[in-house]
Structure formats: C-alpha cells, structure tokens
Image 1 (spheres, helix red, strand yellow):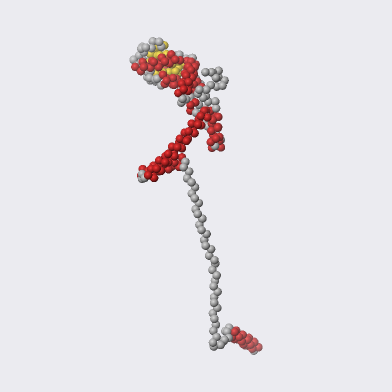
Image 2 (cartoon, rainbow, N blue to C red; image 1 turned 60 degrees about the vertical axis):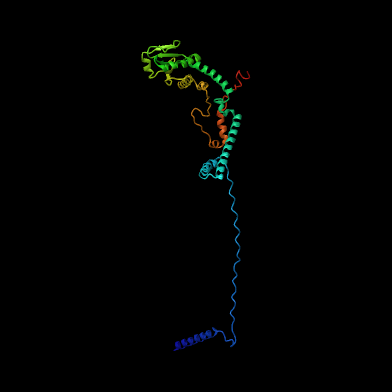
Length: 325
C-alpha cells in the first residue's frame, strides 16, 4: 500500500512538470494587431578576388651558332629545299650558307699556313720540300746520301739478274742495269738461262746456268732480279719483270732493310720522301686521359717526338758546312 501511494505521487509530480514545460514552449500572445518582422539575413562577405598576375613573357630562345656542325646538318637540307622549290629566298639561303662554309675554310687554310711557318717541325716539307729551289738542293743531298748507302750495300751484297738471249724484255732491261752499275758500282752478275748473252751486255759479268741455280731460286720468269748476300748466299727476290731504274732502286732499298743489310737511317736517306713519324717502333701511342683530352697538352706531348727532325735547307750547328756558301 505504501509502495502504491509513493508511485502515484511520483506520477503526479512528473505530469505537473511536463505541463509546465508545455506552457513555456509557446510564446505569449502579443495583441491582435501585432506582427513580427523577419530578421534580415546577414550578407555573407565574399573573399576578395585577387586578379591573376600577368603571365611572365617567355624567355627568348638562345641565338643559333652558325658553325661547321650547323652547316654540315643544314646545307644538304637547304640544297634540297632550293631544288624542290627554287624561290629567290631558298636559293639565296643555300648559296649564302655555302659562302659561309667557304669563308670558314679559307680562314682555316690561312691559319694553317701561318702555323706551319712558325712550327717547322710539323711541316710536311720536312718529308719532301714543296719549293723547287729547296727541292733541287735536297735532291742533290739525297743522291750523295744514296751513293754512300749503296757503297756500303755493295760491299755486302750484289745483284743477280736471270736473263735469256731471246727475251725481248731482258734486252730492254739492260739500260737500267747499266745505269745502276755505272752510278753506284753495285756488283751485278747476269745469269744466262739459255747459254747465250743478251746483245750489248758484253761489259757485264756473266754466269751460265745449267738449270740448278734457276731451280734453287725458283726462277719462273725473265728478267728476274735478286739481291744476294756475297758471303752466305742468302737472297731477297725483287719483283720479276721489266723494271725502271727508279723502281729497281726503291725495291733494293726495301729489300736491304728487310734483310738487315742497311739500317733505318740508311733506308730513310735513300727515300725521295723522308719518313719522320711520331710513332715509335710498336706503332702504338698511349697518353694519360687528361693529356689526350686537352688540345694543348696533346700537341705538346706528340711534338716532343718530332724534336730534332731534320729540316730541308739547314745544317746542324755542329756541322762543318754551317755558315758556308
């Protein structure tokens, strides 16, 4: 019973509180002629628009360098354009570019000429002079040097010539052999393969072969020339057939060097074009990477190999001919 009365009291208290809340939830009446004004909504402030900054102007393209690489690439295209569409502009473009290339080439040629004037050790004139005046002088010197070399060679070797009296080429070979004999006193022996001598060769030394020498030296043609060691009989065949005097002399020089009968200096003295090389005996050049990549260091390193190169028209300072006329 006590529990029921307590529950009833709690229920009445909640109902009273609920009624009070409902009364205060609605506004009180404010008269027949009253009206409420709706509040004006506040305008939302928009963020200030910042005008975009003007685009920065594009950087100007770097200038085009008209050099050999550009000309090498563009000239063929310019020519094609001028041929395909021969307008004044296309034709002028091609030929003015060609003129630029020609002017650059002339500039290089002039600079090269000046360079060799003041770097004589690099000049190709050291091999063979281009001036007729100097060329004549060096020719006389070469003839003198060749006589010395041939005199030394003649003390070690001799020339054998296998010939036949019926061989027309053998007859034509005689003048060159006589010039060789008279100019250098090189021992020459003509070897007859048919038992007869070639007409007009009575002043030569002759030997008559019964076939054994031809077999030993494997002679298959006439005339055939051999450079032969006078002491041990070793030989170096020269190219068979009719040969000029100059060609025989050149072949003798190479044959003698091949066999070791003359040294490199003697061989060079006989050559019309001298051989002065930056290559050593192995023919291989090795340089440090930094030297090889730097033009100045590269040229200096290789120029050292040409120091002392003889210059035509000069004499060493210790030469007895220095200062003579």
